Length: 72
Image (cartoon, rainbow, N blue to C red):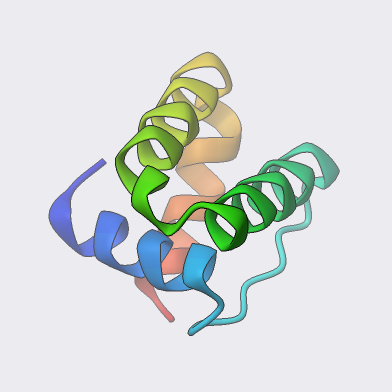
C-alpha cells in the first residue's frame, strides 16, 4: 500500500473520510477496524497491518477499491 492510499485509509478508519465499497467483506473489514480504532486509538499501526494482510489475500478487492480510494 503506497503512502497516498495509506493516508486516506487512516482517514477512513478515523471516520474523517467516508468510503463504501461494492465488496461486503471489505466494508466489514473497514467497520471492524473503525470500531477497534475508536476503542484504542494507539492501535493504528496494527489496523493498517491487518488491512494490508486482507488486501494481500484478496488482490482483486485491492485493485478495485484502492483505485477508488485514491480518487477520493
